[in-house]
Image (cartoon, rainbow, N blue to C red; front, side, top):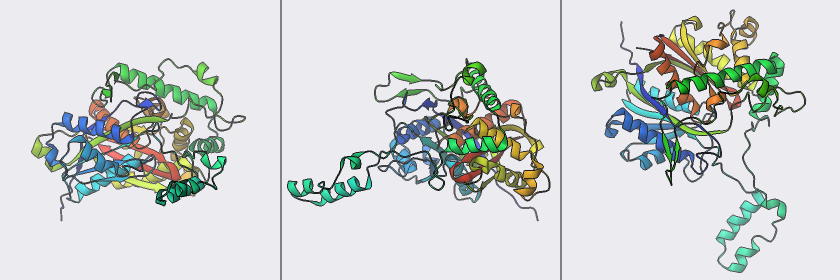
Length: 430
């Protein structure tokens, strides 16, 4: 018996320009950035805010004062206060999770219109106190006399006053993302030259896309509050004038003696936000809106973080393709998140490897070959930047717009994330 299967449409996407941490958005929080992009996205869409039924947002480094950033965005943007919202965290795949969680709500018929996205500020990270000093502060707050309050600190030593800033490292392995990527580069034979060449391609393509106006419909202009005199129109991390010679002069960051990963071939610490509006296909037709794409399928997977941490997309990809009932050769637009050039090149190597397919994926044949020249045609995270919670939404929007521009039928998104997690999403054009 034939059964109607509803499709989830991406009707519009938008992001702030991405900025190197400590620059344009140095005094803004992830919440500030999230409110800016959602308010602008809803206004540009022309959708009645009263028809929005949920907001789902990704965030990796939450504020202790506003842990549910999604709900705070609703309250801070003039959206109806009746709209609920929830926040998700899946490391660098957080806004992918926000989008797929929203899509599932629509697919099940629980909502027709949902805003999903993510936001991150690496300029505004929580600084923690040592446990001894934190306990002294709590004890002091319970005392009623001045003497009692001061007495709470009598056991505190100078070392207890040192701040404890969060590290971008795996709590399980103790390794930073860069150290794990360095391990992958060594084990997979990814050379420094190959990494620099790939990174240079990312910068040049991002510069060309920006200059041509390619990002005009998906990047808003930000008048930075509170003074509104700093006007940000484009990403400030792109280096269109970079050369291989200049990149070759940089010293390795994570393994200074034998390493190959530098500031030039890795994604930088970035502030920014991105969001999309999702609708049921029927609702889009009812409103006379032409979607920019549809979510065909998705899959999440994970691998042992002690092995090759950032290979998660390799395990998610074949599942997403099978769920979409297509093969890799059917994909016309490919966007792979560039945490590091070494990570992208390692992902591509494993995806095309028969040995990996048989030994790691339990498959007789590899997923397929990916030409590095055919991915990220408008640049990637190395050049554009990588606000952890926002990157997935940026890539989904770009793939949908590229499908419209090129006329290709299917697009692919892959994102690696901390903890050995990976996501693959298949998008399609109407």
